Length: 296
Image (cartoon, rainbow, N blue to C red):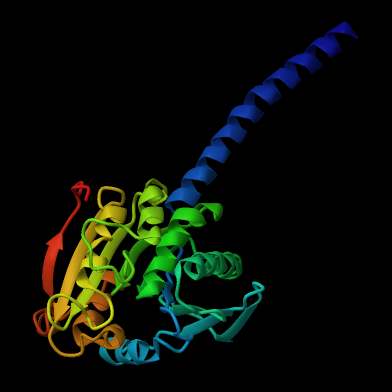
Protein backbone atom coordinates (compact mmCIF):
# COMPACT_ATOMS: atom_id res chain seq x y z
CA UNK A 1 0.00 0.00 0.00
CA UNK A 2 2.82 2.30 0.93
CA UNK A 3 4.51 1.56 -2.39
CA UNK A 4 1.33 2.48 -4.29
CA UNK A 5 1.13 5.79 -2.42
CA UNK A 6 4.79 6.44 -3.14
CA UNK A 7 4.38 5.72 -6.85
CA UNK A 8 1.24 7.89 -6.90
CA UNK A 9 3.11 10.81 -5.36
CA UNK A 10 6.00 10.38 -7.80
CA UNK A 11 3.57 10.30 -10.75
CA UNK A 12 1.84 13.45 -9.48
CA UNK A 13 5.15 15.30 -9.09
CA UNK A 14 6.27 14.27 -12.58
CA UNK A 15 2.91 15.31 -14.05
CA UNK A 16 3.03 18.71 -12.35
CA UNK A 17 6.66 19.10 -13.36
CA UNK A 18 5.65 18.68 -16.99
CA UNK A 19 2.33 20.54 -16.83
CA UNK A 20 3.42 23.89 -15.38
CA UNK A 21 6.45 24.46 -17.66
CA UNK A 22 4.33 23.39 -20.65
CA UNK A 23 1.56 25.79 -19.65
CA UNK A 24 4.06 28.63 -19.21
CA UNK A 25 5.60 27.82 -22.61
CA UNK A 26 2.19 27.76 -24.31
CA UNK A 27 1.22 31.04 -22.65
CA UNK A 28 4.47 32.59 -23.85
CA UNK A 29 3.89 31.33 -27.40
CA UNK A 30 0.33 32.66 -27.47
CA UNK A 31 1.50 36.05 -26.16
CA UNK A 32 4.27 36.14 -28.77
CA UNK A 33 1.81 35.19 -31.53
CA UNK A 34 -0.68 37.85 -30.49
CA UNK A 35 1.95 40.56 -30.32
CA UNK A 36 3.54 39.68 -33.68
CA UNK A 37 0.59 38.55 -35.79
CA UNK A 38 -0.93 41.31 -37.90
CA UNK A 39 -4.43 40.80 -39.21
CA UNK A 40 -4.93 41.08 -42.98
CA UNK A 41 -7.67 43.61 -42.21
CA UNK A 42 -6.02 47.03 -41.92
CA UNK A 43 -8.70 49.73 -42.01
CA UNK A 44 -8.17 53.47 -42.26
CA UNK A 45 -10.33 55.41 -39.81
CA UNK A 46 -11.27 58.90 -41.02
CA UNK A 47 -12.56 61.64 -38.70
CA UNK A 48 -14.00 64.84 -40.20
CA UNK A 49 -13.67 68.30 -38.72
CA UNK A 50 -16.25 70.51 -37.04
CA UNK A 51 -19.61 71.01 -38.77
CA UNK A 52 -18.82 68.14 -41.17
CA UNK A 53 -20.92 65.01 -41.54
CA UNK A 54 -20.08 61.38 -42.24
CA UNK A 55 -20.17 62.29 -45.96
CA UNK A 56 -17.23 64.74 -45.64
CA UNK A 57 -14.72 62.39 -47.27
CA UNK A 58 -16.88 61.18 -50.17
CA UNK A 59 -14.96 63.22 -52.76
CA UNK A 60 -11.63 62.04 -51.36
CA UNK A 61 -12.69 58.38 -51.40
CA UNK A 62 -14.01 58.70 -54.95
CA UNK A 63 -10.68 60.18 -56.02
CA UNK A 64 -8.71 57.42 -54.26
CA UNK A 65 -10.84 54.72 -55.89
CA UNK A 66 -10.27 56.32 -59.28
CA UNK A 67 -6.51 56.72 -58.91
CA UNK A 68 -5.76 53.41 -57.21
CA UNK A 69 -8.33 51.40 -59.19
CA UNK A 70 -9.19 49.74 -55.87
CA UNK A 71 -12.83 49.68 -54.81
CA UNK A 72 -12.17 50.38 -51.13
CA UNK A 73 -15.40 49.66 -49.28
CA UNK A 74 -16.75 52.35 -46.95
CA UNK A 75 -18.38 51.96 -43.56
CA UNK A 76 -19.77 55.08 -41.90
CA UNK A 77 -20.48 55.38 -38.18
CA UNK A 78 -22.39 58.23 -36.59
CA UNK A 79 -22.18 58.63 -32.83
CA UNK A 80 -25.16 60.24 -31.09
CA UNK A 81 -24.72 62.42 -28.00
CA UNK A 82 -25.94 59.51 -25.85
CA UNK A 83 -23.28 57.21 -27.32
CA UNK A 84 -25.64 55.30 -29.60
CA UNK A 85 -24.07 54.18 -32.87
CA UNK A 86 -25.69 54.12 -36.29
CA UNK A 87 -23.99 52.39 -39.22
CA UNK A 88 -24.34 52.87 -42.96
CA UNK A 89 -22.41 51.02 -45.64
CA UNK A 90 -20.35 47.89 -44.99
CA UNK A 91 -16.90 46.34 -45.22
CA UNK A 92 -16.82 44.10 -48.25
CA UNK A 93 -15.55 40.55 -47.74
CA UNK A 94 -11.95 40.31 -48.93
CA UNK A 95 -11.33 44.08 -48.71
CA UNK A 96 -8.37 44.43 -46.35
CA UNK A 97 -8.05 48.22 -46.67
CA UNK A 98 -11.56 49.59 -46.10
CA UNK A 99 -12.33 53.15 -45.06
CA UNK A 100 -14.26 53.70 -41.83
CA UNK A 101 -15.62 57.22 -41.32
CA UNK A 102 -16.56 58.17 -37.76
CA UNK A 103 -18.69 61.30 -37.39
CA UNK A 104 -20.72 62.84 -34.57
CA UNK A 105 -24.26 64.07 -34.04
CA UNK A 106 -22.78 66.98 -32.11
CA UNK A 107 -20.12 68.10 -34.56
CA UNK A 108 -19.69 71.62 -33.20
CA UNK A 109 -16.38 73.39 -32.64
CA UNK A 110 -14.77 74.26 -29.32
CA UNK A 111 -12.45 72.83 -26.68
CA UNK A 112 -15.16 71.08 -24.64
CA UNK A 113 -16.80 69.54 -27.71
CA UNK A 114 -13.48 68.22 -29.06
CA UNK A 115 -12.98 66.37 -25.77
CA UNK A 116 -16.52 64.97 -25.93
CA UNK A 117 -15.99 63.89 -29.54
CA UNK A 118 -12.80 62.05 -28.51
CA UNK A 119 -14.89 60.14 -25.95
CA UNK A 120 -17.51 59.31 -28.60
CA UNK A 121 -14.75 58.19 -30.97
CA UNK A 122 -13.59 55.80 -28.25
CA UNK A 123 -17.10 54.29 -28.03
CA UNK A 124 -17.17 53.76 -31.81
CA UNK A 125 -13.61 52.40 -31.89
CA UNK A 126 -14.29 49.78 -29.21
CA UNK A 127 -17.38 48.59 -31.08
CA UNK A 128 -15.48 48.42 -34.39
CA UNK A 129 -12.60 46.50 -32.79
CA UNK A 130 -15.00 44.03 -31.17
CA UNK A 131 -16.97 43.52 -34.40
CA UNK A 132 -14.21 43.32 -37.01
CA UNK A 133 -11.27 41.90 -35.01
CA UNK A 134 -8.48 43.95 -36.62
CA UNK A 135 -5.32 44.49 -34.57
CA UNK A 136 -3.77 47.40 -36.46
CA UNK A 137 -5.08 50.40 -38.41
CA UNK A 138 -4.26 53.83 -39.84
CA UNK A 139 -6.09 57.10 -39.20
CA UNK A 140 -6.77 60.35 -41.04
CA UNK A 141 -8.19 63.51 -39.54
CA UNK A 142 -9.13 66.73 -41.30
CA UNK A 143 -9.10 69.99 -39.32
CA UNK A 144 -10.48 69.37 -35.81
CA UNK A 145 -10.73 65.69 -36.75
CA UNK A 146 -6.97 65.58 -36.21
CA UNK A 147 -7.42 67.07 -32.73
CA UNK A 148 -10.11 64.51 -31.91
CA UNK A 149 -7.81 61.67 -32.97
CA UNK A 150 -4.90 63.14 -31.00
CA UNK A 151 -6.94 63.44 -27.80
CA UNK A 152 -8.31 59.93 -28.35
CA UNK A 153 -4.78 58.49 -28.70
CA UNK A 154 -3.60 60.15 -25.51
CA UNK A 155 -6.64 59.59 -23.29
CA UNK A 156 -8.51 56.51 -24.47
CA UNK A 157 -6.58 54.38 -26.94
CA UNK A 158 -4.77 52.35 -24.25
CA UNK A 159 -8.15 51.07 -22.98
CA UNK A 160 -8.34 48.73 -26.00
CA UNK A 161 -5.73 45.99 -25.72
CA UNK A 162 -3.95 44.08 -28.50
CA UNK A 163 -4.37 46.75 -31.17
CA UNK A 164 -1.84 49.20 -32.60
CA UNK A 165 -2.03 52.27 -34.80
CA UNK A 166 0.58 52.33 -37.55
CA UNK A 167 0.21 55.74 -39.15
CA UNK A 168 -1.70 58.96 -38.47
CA UNK A 169 -2.11 61.75 -41.00
CA UNK A 170 -3.64 65.06 -39.97
CA UNK A 171 -4.66 67.63 -42.58
CA UNK A 172 -4.87 71.33 -41.61
CA UNK A 173 -5.25 70.44 -37.93
CA UNK A 174 -5.14 73.57 -35.74
CA UNK A 175 -3.15 72.32 -32.76
CA UNK A 176 -3.18 75.86 -31.37
CA UNK A 177 -6.75 76.54 -32.57
CA UNK A 178 -7.16 79.89 -34.37
CA UNK A 179 -4.05 81.37 -32.75
CA UNK A 180 -1.22 82.47 -35.01
CA UNK A 181 1.13 82.82 -32.05
CA UNK A 182 4.33 80.81 -31.81
CA UNK A 183 4.86 81.64 -28.12
CA UNK A 184 1.49 81.26 -26.36
CA UNK A 185 -0.62 78.11 -26.13
CA UNK A 186 -4.36 77.56 -26.12
CA UNK A 187 -6.05 75.11 -23.74
CA UNK A 188 -6.16 72.26 -26.27
CA UNK A 189 -2.45 72.56 -27.08
CA UNK A 190 -1.58 72.65 -23.38
CA UNK A 191 -3.64 69.50 -22.84
CA UNK A 192 -2.05 67.63 -25.73
CA UNK A 193 1.48 68.63 -24.70
CA UNK A 194 0.80 67.54 -21.10
CA UNK A 195 -0.43 64.11 -22.26
CA UNK A 196 2.04 63.47 -25.08
CA UNK A 197 3.98 60.77 -23.20
CA UNK A 198 0.89 58.56 -23.48
CA UNK A 199 1.07 58.54 -27.29
CA UNK A 200 1.85 55.18 -28.96
CA UNK A 201 5.63 55.04 -29.26
CA UNK A 202 5.70 53.15 -32.58
CA UNK A 203 3.36 55.60 -34.31
CA UNK A 204 4.36 57.47 -37.49
CA UNK A 205 2.71 60.89 -37.86
CA UNK A 206 2.35 63.13 -40.92
CA UNK A 207 1.06 66.65 -40.27
CA UNK A 208 -0.01 68.34 -43.52
CA UNK A 209 -0.67 72.05 -43.86
CA UNK A 210 -2.11 73.86 -46.86
CA UNK A 211 -1.29 77.48 -47.56
CA UNK A 212 -2.78 79.94 -49.99
CA UNK A 213 -0.27 82.61 -48.99
CA UNK A 214 2.35 80.69 -46.93
CA UNK A 215 0.69 81.78 -43.68
CA UNK A 216 -2.84 80.30 -43.78
CA UNK A 217 -5.23 78.10 -45.74
CA UNK A 218 -7.88 80.78 -45.33
CA UNK A 219 -9.14 79.30 -42.05
CA UNK A 220 -6.30 77.71 -40.08
CA UNK A 221 -2.98 79.54 -39.58
CA UNK A 222 0.06 77.58 -40.71
CA UNK A 223 1.68 78.40 -37.36
CA UNK A 224 -1.17 76.62 -35.57
CA UNK A 225 -0.64 73.46 -37.65
CA UNK A 226 3.09 73.65 -36.96
CA UNK A 227 2.53 73.61 -33.19
CA UNK A 228 1.81 69.89 -33.55
CA UNK A 229 5.57 69.37 -33.27
CA UNK A 230 5.31 70.09 -29.53
CA UNK A 231 2.84 67.22 -29.24
CA UNK A 232 4.46 64.51 -31.38
CA UNK A 233 8.11 65.31 -31.86
CA UNK A 234 10.39 62.96 -29.88
CA UNK A 235 7.31 61.14 -28.55
CA UNK A 236 6.41 58.92 -31.52
CA UNK A 237 8.62 56.89 -33.86
CA UNK A 238 8.53 59.46 -36.69
CA UNK A 239 6.96 62.88 -37.10
CA UNK A 240 6.96 64.76 -40.41
CA UNK A 241 5.54 68.16 -41.31
CA UNK A 242 4.51 68.77 -44.91
CA UNK A 243 3.33 72.00 -46.53
CA UNK A 244 1.22 71.91 -49.69
CA UNK A 245 0.89 75.02 -51.84
CA UNK A 246 -0.73 75.86 -55.15
CA UNK A 247 -4.27 75.24 -56.37
CA UNK A 248 -7.06 73.94 -54.13
CA UNK A 249 -5.27 74.67 -50.88
CA UNK A 250 -8.15 76.42 -49.12
CA UNK A 251 -9.16 74.71 -45.90
CA UNK A 252 -12.25 72.93 -47.22
CA UNK A 253 -10.54 71.83 -50.47
CA UNK A 254 -7.55 70.15 -48.82
CA UNK A 255 -8.90 66.60 -48.32
CA UNK A 256 -9.40 66.20 -52.07
CA UNK A 257 -6.35 68.24 -53.11
CA UNK A 258 -4.40 66.19 -55.71
CA UNK A 259 -1.11 66.55 -53.87
CA UNK A 260 -2.67 65.40 -50.60
CA UNK A 261 -4.40 62.47 -52.32
CA UNK A 262 -0.93 61.48 -53.50
CA UNK A 263 0.40 61.76 -49.93
CA UNK A 264 -2.42 59.56 -48.65
CA UNK A 265 -1.70 56.92 -51.27
CA UNK A 266 2.03 56.93 -50.63
CA UNK A 267 2.29 57.36 -46.86
CA UNK A 268 -1.02 56.21 -45.39
CA UNK A 269 -2.02 53.41 -47.76
CA UNK A 270 1.63 52.49 -48.39
CA UNK A 271 1.22 52.20 -52.16
CA UNK A 272 4.23 51.77 -54.41
CA UNK A 273 3.52 54.56 -56.86
CA UNK A 274 4.43 54.49 -60.56
CA UNK A 275 7.16 56.99 -61.34
CA UNK A 276 4.76 59.22 -63.29
CA UNK A 277 2.65 59.60 -60.13
CA UNK A 278 5.62 59.77 -57.81
CA UNK A 279 7.08 62.86 -59.45
CA UNK A 280 3.88 64.56 -60.56
CA UNK A 281 2.28 67.11 -58.22
CA UNK A 282 4.90 66.48 -55.56
CA UNK A 283 4.19 68.60 -52.47
CA UNK A 284 6.79 70.78 -50.86
CA UNK A 285 8.16 68.94 -47.83
CA UNK A 286 8.76 71.63 -45.25
CA UNK A 287 10.80 69.53 -42.81
CA UNK A 288 11.05 66.15 -41.22
CA UNK A 289 11.41 66.42 -37.47
CA UNK A 290 12.20 63.49 -35.24
CA UNK A 291 14.28 65.33 -32.65
CA UNK A 292 13.35 67.34 -29.57
CA UNK A 293 11.78 70.74 -30.42
CA UNK A 294 12.75 73.93 -28.64
CA UNK A 295 10.13 74.91 -26.11
CA UNK A 296 8.38 78.20 -26.90
